[in-house]
Length: 167
Image (cartoon, rainbow, N blue to C red):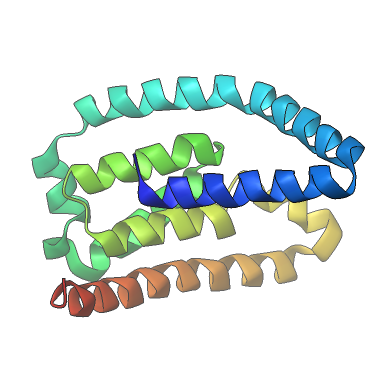
């Protein structure tokens, strides 16, 4: 089992124990809320894992490496950010897909650009911003978010290469 998961589980258990000692009803309410969130999220998690498994079988590592791999350089990060813009799914779908891209030889920087762009930009959400912020504001925010996604991928790739020498 993953050590990080064990630590988070221990801290969570300690938090519930402390909450129970102070106000048992609060701890019960928190547990009920957690179970409700799990019930709401579990179907998404299960379907997303199966989808990610299917996509990982469809991804051809040679193609992913060519378009999103280290050899693709800046182009791969821009392409990763463009693909992220199209994403409208939940994190339960996007993160397994990102892991599948890594497993198929996408560069870490392209995957960071993909996930960052998915979080910051969305072509599907953009029209919803227009009535609230106005078109110029929304388009400038969108463009800056896209540039940040690519820059984040470039910075991550650079740092990842440096840190990989120490592992």
